[in-house]
Length: 288
Image (cartoon, rainbow, N blue to C red; front, side, top):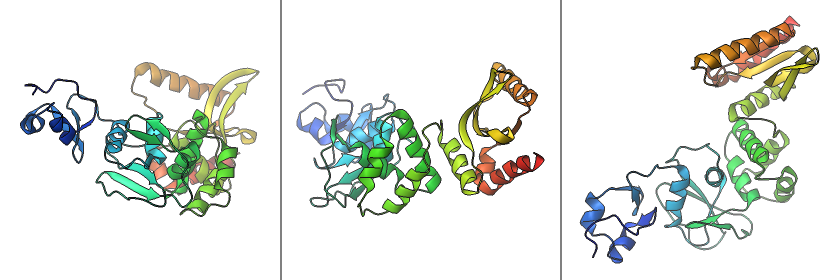
């Protein structure tokens, strides 16, 4: 038996497997440089715990028919919507075992589940299934934002997802269809998508990522705009701590104003009460 825990163990492993293989003793597992991710699944303490790592850990406990889906599958592909230890989202075929694992949210598919893409300890759901689960059972603004980002990254096709949704009867399929009608892959962030949805649902037809020009010269690109009214709507969630960034923001704002544009800044506090954001834009429209 090895006398130290430094070896030939994978990045994530089941404790009982390591003990059975005599790679670790129970005491080494308990007192060594290991941290538990899920029940019976461990990694080294110096490994950064990400949501993708949690998905890999969950794969060691799931039946082979399970697939990582939704926001968890998106995290594996690079999205940063979830915190590291948020529940891992899993989809299962309509028949077969339904595991109950703390830290894992498992749902059953209402229709036959196509094979997933093999990934490390498990598999990832097909793109349309992943997108559906990412947009289902969440508020509309979140659903639209997630679909915006999946479209922007090229992880899904709007047309293929619309076709996939036809005739389905999964829970919240109506909500996902509604969200799909609101998508715009030009959006660059979840808050920007949410702001766009709030404004459009209030009857304010903003356009995302508009390049403002003045006398034929590009002045700035703005998050959202009412081009005919020369109103820019900016979500103020960006970091402005560095002096150089602060100066650039001021210069950019001055260029927009010199071009005759009104700039409306919407903060996270405004977004907490969407009516405030709508009121700010309506006030700018009234000034025109």
